[in-house]
Image (cartoon, rainbow, N blue to C red; front, side, top):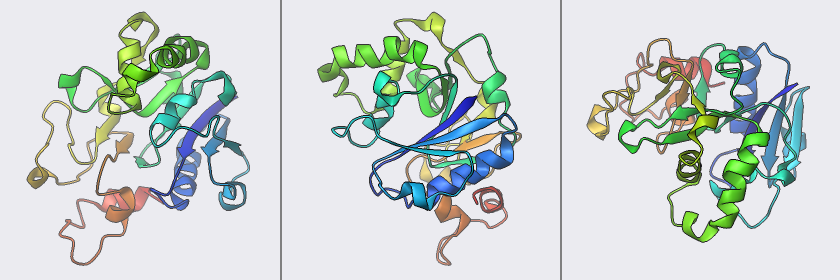
Length: 239
């Protein structure tokens, strides 16, 4: 049995984001799986509806924000087998079975960062197995926690660790994922004036980072100047 894994910490998003992510995975994944939620919210078990939902407490209580994502690689997370992780601010557009079957011989497959000049990875979507991630990311992180704490997030730590053992990691095809704001990795639209929020052709997952969130495009306020036709794909899939 494989796992879909997500993380719900703090109050950045409403709990409905977890339900929407669950709904999207059920529509677009045919492989039998568990949907595992790591959270600090005690009522999550009663809120998210689904036959294959498993709610677990976060492995530790002294991490904040994105640093909690690294704790998923710890032995205390008790994650076994192949896991496909999604941030809560993604929109799943098509069947995602291929995220489990791509580079099947590799236990870890990651998404390239949207800014290719960083030569790093984005942790919004990643397939991992802790047989690899515990010794190659979690333990090195603990060993050099002071140095890593100066980096700007979990994906920077993951990218740094991966560079030490690159043979253990593979990448998803770039065309499977896209930034809702920046659109194309080869010609990213960093300037806000160029954000159009159109769907990248044939992409399977859209990643939202920063503002706006998926909910803001799915339910835009009247004063916002988004083109309704351009953002219709968000409303159709984020539900």
